[in-house]
Amino acid sequence: MTTTRYDSDEEGSGWLIFAGTILGLAGIMRIIDAFWAFGYHGNLPAGLQDGVLGDNVKNYGWVWLFVGIILLVSSFFVIVRLQLARWIGFIAAAIGGLSAMTWMPYYPVWSLVYIALAVLVFYALARYGGRLDAGRQTS
Image (cartoon, rainbow, N blue to C red; front, side, top):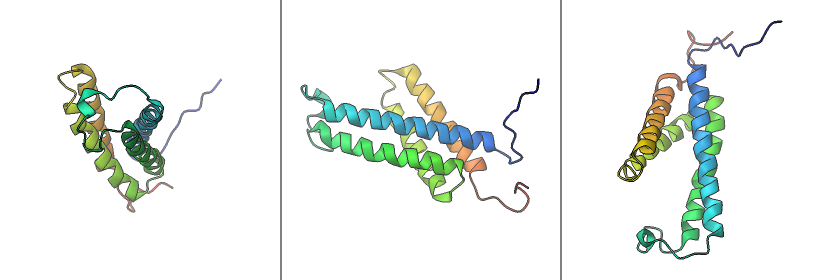
């Protein structure tokens, strides 16, 4: 009995699949957050009383929905090696890593995990997300 394994001659394809997967999961989580915000009917948390997007949680829901859709589309395009998605992935990984630092006092382990994932996504996109040159093309 033989087993087939995903084999790709393309250097770094595993890293790009990893980066695309993490971006996709982040997009799904943002969309879930958006649905939560749309359905939330309780009192506004104290930290959002004077928030950047106002005091309506639905405003945040629209932003989260928009960001989630961008991350999902970007994750697909990273896997198929579209350059625009690489740059969106850079921005998303940087913002994700930096925003995780604000949660460090409350959730230190998860913040460090989130920062590490952002760094790995950034590495994958920086190292392997570029255009294929003649020496790296698959046959």
